[in-house]
Length: 320
Figure (tube, helix red, strand yellow):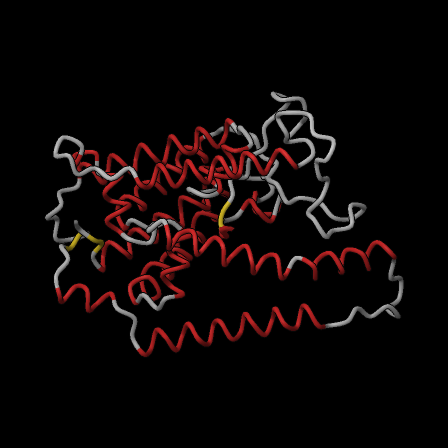
């Protein structure tokens, strides 16, 4: 099974960064979180990136020397973590750890001028998010590793439909996304306003948060437009080229993967920056979508990502 070349990582990272920013989502944001809310916007986004991802991976010749390489000993050596990449990851982990520790241990200055009770509660809510966020990141990364979504052959093996008649097509990816979709769908049944069935125990804010100031960070954009379709189509091209979306790329970067650290991620940020500029050009005079919700961005970050969508009243409640 082929893997991405150095050029493939550069182009793939750029296209994924540009597409996820323009379309406000990726496989996690649209494919799992958005569709689990029955978001029509997310269903359109998923169809867009699946179409171009499958088309590109199926049409591009396996032997293409520009964006694909066949695995052999030399190639695997290039993909192994090095002393330099391990050092970069160690420093990054140390910095993030220090910020997390600072956030958990710092004290709120109650003597500050004009400090209100709500501001104090908001600060406490923010601090309470740190440990659950770390736990969620560990679970998410573990899920990607266990399901082998960080292995290129699993991605290309699904996206390349030319393998179907050969009997070597791999359905793992759709099973993993389907499992994530079902878990997310069930979880939303305990979020007030998003439950399909009436639930008297539905939560108005995350566990451990004070409901007077706490709330779920859920995208609100429900517009299906050219930016969504074009952005997700571009993301699909990058996904089909390099076999990476932001979630697995974060895991591989944390493992010291040279091509992901040195090529894919830098070009991802370049693409994301240019896409933000393109949004202003395509919609002059309108506020940036990134300001609507913290989850509208990635996926990324994964937020990962999320889909920037919020659908209407199809199941009894007005639903980023």
